[in-house]
Image (tube, rainbow, N blue to C red; front, side, top):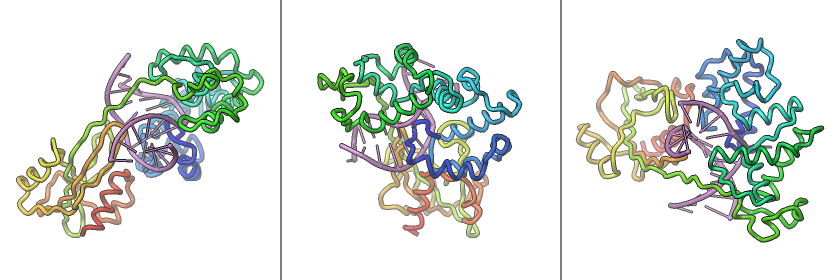
Length: 304
DNA sequence: AAGCCGTGGAG
DNA sequence: TCTCCAAGGCT
């Protein structure tokens, strides 16, 4: 849950998840719908699918016993170098550095390491520098201490290095270049996408479609979505395809993903389709929902 | 290697 | 508004 997600965001999800699925066996056997419901709103949904795969791997390949070495942990789905090292050091005392964004930031500033952390090959540079200095007695505490430092005194945007216990070891602080580190090149180019969300009502039920098994928001149910090349094309396209199309929203519902910006117009139509599945509100509410779909439903209620 | 994968918060 | 980032991993 903590992959690319802040602790404060994770806590309520974590509590709920553990209350519902307290053991590895429970997780391994759960329905995907239950998993996604518990994860709804947290994002990066492949994480929960991978976590279930990992639970199934533990049951099948490790006799239900949680692996205890970073090497074995990395064979599990969704567990890469960081997560394996974090679990191994914190839970089992293995002496390995847990290289996360905080660790990169803290050490790149302390030592003025110019390596571009966006490039995978830079990881080895940090590993080789940090591995020898991990506390051999309390490796988990070492890793957590560095991560805590990285979220507090040495945070990304507003570090307070003067009061940091590491100030006198901090090369970038001493020449005022701390905000130049870490060096990170990757820039996400955001694509604009334009949609009409179709509101097709039949006997008090609304039409939905299930998204593809792979890719963005995989397997979630949403209103039928028609994609267009531009915002103008949405108006023209919808009225051309549907006789009495009625635009329900004055301004589009906007939703931003990591590298896509969606603008969605709600359109009520008279037509039905056999390709769509019609759910009552009560039934639909039992399904896992994405934040985008929640926004669309709020907009629908406000404009009906 | 570089692109993909959610969402919320901060500045 | 816009940009960047957050206890990354997979393909």
